[in-house]
Length: 165
Image (cartoon, rainbow, N blue to C red; front, side, top):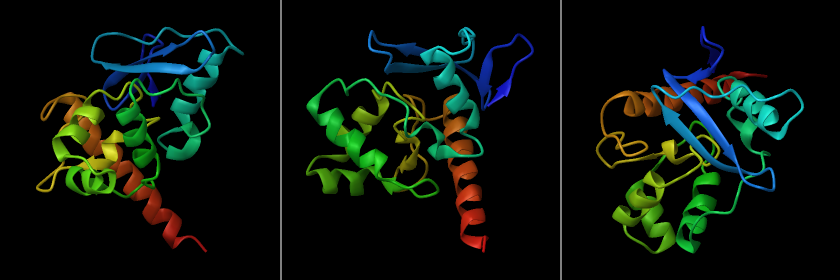
């Protein structure tokens, strides 16, 4: 993440808008080309979220401990747990995840597309059998490029970790 000239946080060319629920848990992260993230006050739960998101490019696990609101449906909760089990730098296909969950690739794709917490719940680590697949409802464009960037960033970090003594 880098600071945009107007002070809004950006990642891979997109603004991040974070919404917290009434318990201080992250309920939604929206990716937008136009909507900037409002800079939260120091010491607030939103500021802690922003700080962790800013650390993501150098440490994808920085967001792991952030409090998340429950998944919207029981199936999405199962998909969320499966996504959280995929290590940074690795991917699974929609079909492989579907077999693991006893579901269909289409249902897994729909759950990933509806994921309200991109980055925190790493749906970008799920790819098509013949390519990247979509991201946040887009198969091309800024969000698809962001998925490719996220995966490449994680691979570089994972490769660096394997090479370290």
